[in-house]
Amino acid sequence: MEILNNNTVIADINSSAADRQGAVSEAFRFSDGDRRALYQTIFSRRDVRGQFLQDSIPESVLSRVLMAAHYAPSVGFMQPWNFVVIKSGETKQQVRRLFDKAHNEAAEMFPADKREVYRNLKLEGILEAPINICITCDKQRAGPVVVGRTHIPEMDVYSSVCAVQNLWLAARAEGLGLGWVSILDPLSLKELLEIPEGVVPVAYICLGYVSRFFDKPELQSAGWRPRLPLAELVNFERYGRPAGDDSGEKLLARISSDQQELETKGYQPGFVSAE
Ligand SMILES: Cc1cc2c(cc1C)N(C[C@H](O)[C@H](O)[C@H](O)COP(=O)(O)O)c1[nH]c(=O)[nH]c(=O)c1N2
Image 1 (cartoon, rainbow, N blue to C red):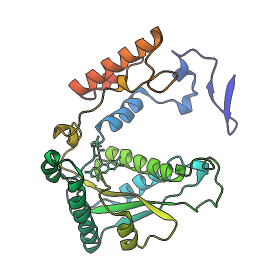
Image 2 (image 1 turned 90 degrees about the vertical axis):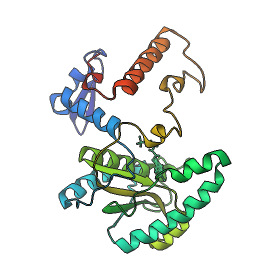
Image 3 (image 1 turned 180 degrees about the vertical axis):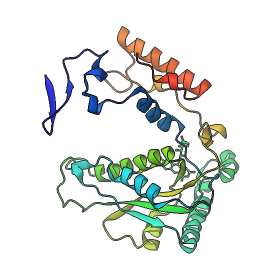
């Protein structure tokens, strides 16, 4: 049986698992190189706070990463986002002051033994990054009733988050570091950026070329939190339920060995093997 999209055959769902990729028509198929590049982007993406260079970002590159964000999925095709591009040093200073205030308040929320470690973490690159972008969500963009948002009102904000992730991955592919700063009072940020009623600031990001990308998350390297074993987070049929059969066990074993390989060797092209 064929799956049709705009009258174009995109797959034959009767094909076996082994040749499913082969069943996708030539025009839609990813080469091994393309697949490797995609996974490389995902596994080498980092939250960047401290390695920004001052080099300016060409319009062509900025346009591409913003386009990647704009082509994210969104509930009911709302496309609820706006992108406030900030280059002004004065505006960055004002946002940085909001960060300082929130960061001090945040430190007090952690238990005493973690407070000092928290204070020493670098958690933003607002002034160092040549560009900051605030990504918002306009909850009224598609009217009051939206396909897919009828029962879960937060779906619009989740859609804007999808745009952020697209931007993040595209930025990595372009060699741009991106850091998400959420230690900010949202009402103060709204006021500063003149974000209207009904529009929510979803993400404040710092963007720029960087001297390097770290191999591991900074919070992991700093001993704040380890990466969790994925196999402990994959459940079967019900939340929290472990594998109940051989195929579940086999999947978990494969996941464990894949993660072990990633954590010890980092992402290698061989990670994307045919089988
Ligand atoms: C919603 C949200 C909000 C924030 C973040 C991320 C996300 C998804 N992160 C980045 C976060 O610390 C980072 O993603 C993890 O530590 C994992 O590291 P890598 O992104 O893999 O490098 C982040 N980092 C930071 O330095 N200051 C911050 O305020 C935030 N806020």
